[in-house]
Length: 68
Image 1 (cartoon, rainbow, N blue to C red):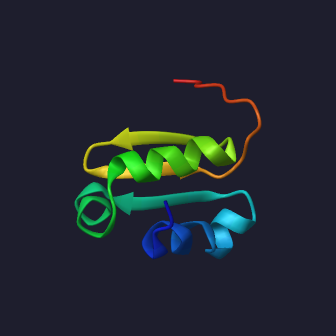
Image 2: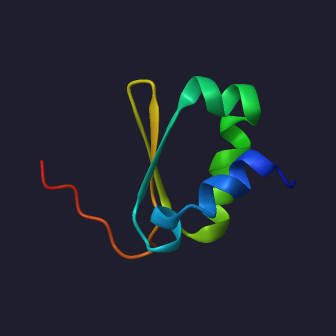
């Protein structure tokens, strides 16, 4: 389902260049939903983390290693 807020996230320079994008969970739930965001992250093959009240999206489908 198309959501302008979610599309705007992935049109950012950071997202287009394979970087990190961070958004407050409260705003995600006001303007879209966590379920919609997760579905779009999965569709793109990216990685998403929830850290405190923030969602961090790694806009790269490469491998991921947590160091510490």
